[in-house]
Length: 133
Image (cartoon, rainbow, N blue to C red; front, top):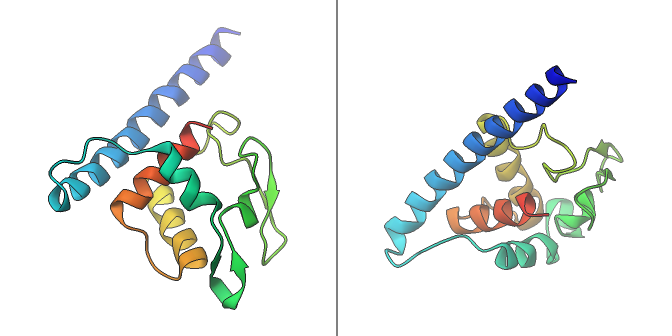
């Protein structure tokens, strides 16, 4: 039991550190363009995450097309049918623990839905939305 609690604590520390560092780096990028910027916003992130766009392969999609509306549950990739484990780190403690994975998937997913890389503000808002679900 103690090992399980210690593992959970270490995962939480790792998660907090990696995602916090990434959000801080995004914040520094945003501050270069907008010195009055104060914080990322989960409600803006939700709008980005749930809005539909003509994305990859000319199909109308949103982030929810693959990740679903309940980020605490598994979903299915719109194009491949592959199962996607829960996006919320509350349901899936492995989420947001590896910087390279965060950067890879946020870039790929923005390209799939928006046909472009997201801005630092958009990325920060979306991640803030996800980690608060």
